[in-house]
Length: 279
Image (cartoon, rainbow, N blue to C red; front, side, top):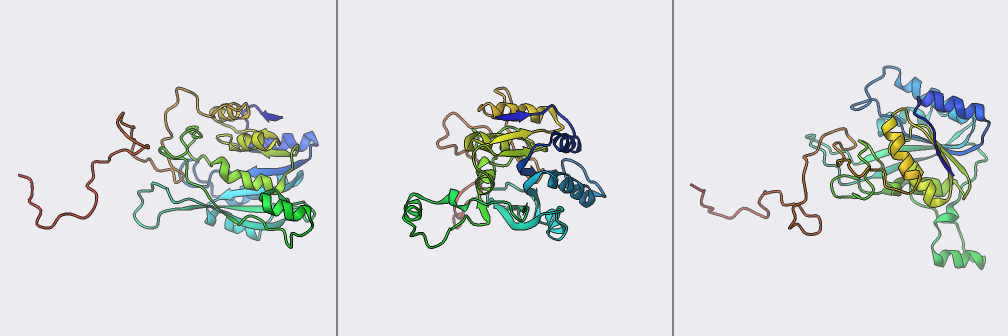
């Protein structure tokens, strides 16, 4: 069962979960990254640590998302009673950034857990490995890598999954995190759920979920995804921003396009030698 609470601030959601006395297997924290959309707080690090302290009271596992420079301070400033399990990286190659210089191609995620919290690397075994495990011949338990490669949901990439949220993460990025830490029926808490990616993954993995966001538009997206429908309403337009908060050029697919290719009007290949300039 997946619940989407009424819109409220993340601190109110954490307090409500604390009062409920429910045990949470995983809390997903994906705040804004203190730049661009969402504004800037001078006390951002202290603010995030307060959230970590709050969810640590009831969570076996906590995932904290951000740009590398945002999450780095929390490698040494961990939530109480939890240890750092891994620094995870979401790697994508298709960021349409127009910044002159290095083009962003990653988000970071810190995985914290209680010392006795269980992991499930066996959820990633293929058929051959499962057969060896059944026979007692699997020499070691292989796990997934700490780098998750999945394209940004932008333009025509992942169009069916796009919701219109300005910083949506693909379900393929959240799925291995929950597969590693949960078994069917476990409870996942996401108090800053944004587009509701957690709801889509919980539904597929048969996990219980509680989601909330302070933005009513985003909780509506999460409700649609909790019910198995696309997060985007039929009348919604494509996303206007990429993860860096930049506005990519708007393009429309012409009727005669093939395989989603949209002609740009720019010449391809090398320029011809001795080309005659047009008069």
